Image 1 (cartoon, rainbow, N blue to C red):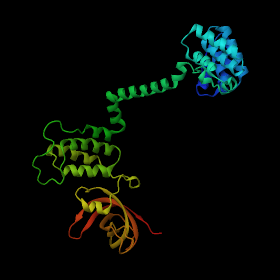
Image 2 (image 1 turned 45 degrees about the horizontal axis):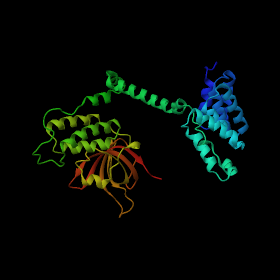
Image 3 (image 1 turned 180 degrees about the vertical axis):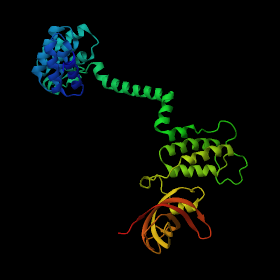
Length: 366
């Protein structure tokens, strides 16, 4: 495939910017064969040679560049530096003098002459001379900022696409076609009119400000999007047991319909036994994944009921007792260690047990 005109120069300057000077020389040399009148090629070939300590090559490039553009200050300063390193002090001073004649304000040339005059040991001064003190050697401005321009352009393009996508009916149509549940959830909005909270909510277990309730509505919807099911259920329960107005609670109540059982392997939050005992009403309907020992087992063909000694290790180590009901045929026995995934259905005050509807049961016998 034929490469575009200027390809080698662009590649050479790209490598030069990355300080990969050997690769830069290779590409810039190829570009020079096609365009021997481009003084910029000689300039950066000279710079690259200086940085690879090829002073003879640098001298050759700078001098050839001056044949193309004899008044170029950058080429003059580059050659002056090479003369300095070759200890041709007078020649270096003459070139700096030429630069100052054309541009009296050139700081590199002015400083170089001052340093020489102030130096007590010229040989040491020459030995310690470094390129950045005598010329800029920066790549062309566009080459230097090109990576940033490309990055900014890509980011801007993505932002524009996102704005167009979300600000037009396209987003809504995409959701309705590929994610109908999300589209339906988006249609549930917070009520615009009417009170948000009740001033006299005597039976409320939780008290929120208007802002808290409005924020909760948005957060719960996001949690449902992200399958943070238990987090969403607890937040919903607290609002439904709070001082929120009946109209607001109606909207929150609709959100329960979008909650489906989570994957037990990636449950967002697995509440501990003592957490549920502390606020059983707030945890109604949450999903648990607990281990424990079976006790008081009752089996029939279609279901099993038993007490789960949660996190039982010995008689002194147990979180509490949960009563489990699970449908299906199971081959289990008392004292067997199992893992149960299910939902919390309530608290039996008479027995002091948590009521769990089992969904999945796994044998943990070794």
